[in-house]
Amino acid sequence: MKMAWSGLLLGLGTVSAQAMPCSTPSVQGEQQGKFDASGEICFVLPALNENYVSATLSGITDARLLDGQNRRIRTLLEGGPADGEHQLLFSLPQQQVTSLVLHGNEGMRWRFSWQMKETPPLPRTQRVAPVSPVLQQLEKALEAGAGTTEFWQDRQRYGTPLVEPFDADHKRVTFLWRGAKQNVFLFGSPAGDHEPLFRLGHSDVWFRSYVVPADTVMQYKLAPDVPRVSGSPRDQRSDRSVQSADDRCEVCRSLESVVFARSQSIPFLFRAGHLAAVASRRVDAKNAHQRAVGQYA
Image 1 (cartoon, rainbow, N blue to C red):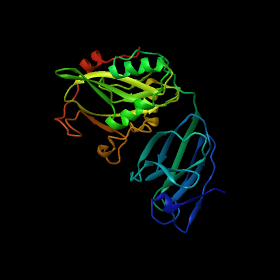
Image 2 (cartoon, rainbow, N blue to C red):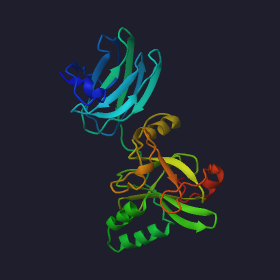
Image 3 (tube, one colour):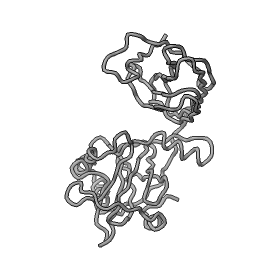
Image 4 (cartoon, helix red, strand yellow):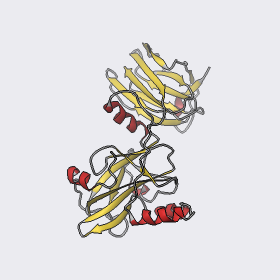
């Protein structure tokens, strides 16, 4: 029987001497019970391909996902009210057995209902010619047989997103992702929506460009290889947030020092010199949308 160590769950420096047994649920169902003195219950989740999990928790204050070595992958719920109901939507690491560990108060009744689905990636195959001069040069180099290593080395050196001059009052900003297989979505775009990036030829470069005011400060997320979700447009939008991650491709880490604590969002700002923040300004979503480059139809 699978065992999960509570010491690791709590993020302690030492492992607790007590481990808890984990049950193995089906891909869909509901269980309920009452917390014992340990205040913990554990479920082993199966190894799946592309997937998403929707779950409802009642009477539970904390929920964490652990890998096969009982190392914490993700905190799904922390410090929730014991008498509250929580809706979760998340994805499991592909082809890995994981454990879901739930916490609550001793004697408190709990309920856990869930549905796990394997899904094909949501395709976004439209190709758009880049308007960024840097990407135009890269496109020509790729057609001549070059690779993208030097491009990504430059991004490591100068940071992402790629910022280029446009006119006296605006900048052209190109959001980038490296190495996705099917699609990449941008959250918090200047146009105010979740929008797909475009692949540069058959390379590992995904991009989308916007023209924005020169004093823009904003946050964004990028979600690669978002699975197809059956349901409403709202469900589709929600599932993209399941996969979202910091804009940190393998070599793009120059903004790491300004990443908000405990946040997956990247604060993006134009900088004079290195990382000097300018006055915060909301982008006019309508105008930005009209100026957006490569709008997906």
